[in-house]
Image (cartoon, rainbow, N blue to C red; front, side, top):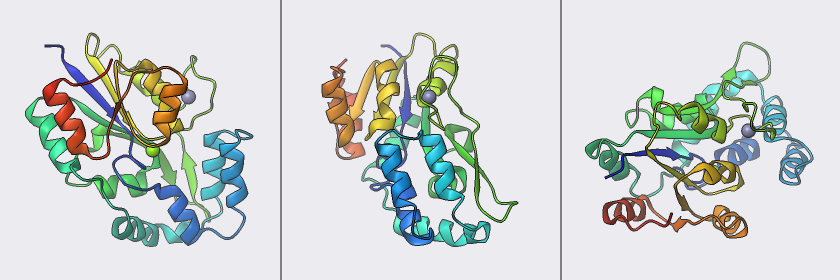
Length: 221
Ligand SMILES: [Mg+2]
Ligand SMILES: [Zn+2]
């Protein structure tokens, strides 16, 4: 049986809703909404837009934001069982997220090792929150992603050469990674994008669906 490696999105996939939008609604002064629209309309890159949005929030809100995300974000059903499943089957699992370390890590604490989490980083030393980008696009991607998922996959390609690459996601930011994957689990907007780009996918709603499909090898590829 082919060995597998899993690259799983965080916002809207591990958590049921998008945390960045929720954080902006709660903490940012008015004026962040046009930035979201600019990102969606592709007038500005995700990196530029997310950086701009967080720069509107004061650094001293850090603890409040962490508390907010921890109390508010709901983890999708079956996620703990999914982690247990990957451990039991010895499948490397990475959470690759356009989210920011200071709220992604606390949500996943005691669930995953920090080295399984690949996301953007943050700097609270200034007056306003500054996002730092440790996983920028490589030479093959020109989208200015912020956290570039296809670049992350390419970077790990040698380590997992010959492995079946599995991508799990929900949105446009998972599309380029999906193109590199052998198997895609999709929900929500990523389903539309897979259809549009003729990428075979397996739909999921909970992580129990993912476990079930992997156990039965009922995946489209
Ligand atoms: Mg997502
Ligand atoms: Zn990129």
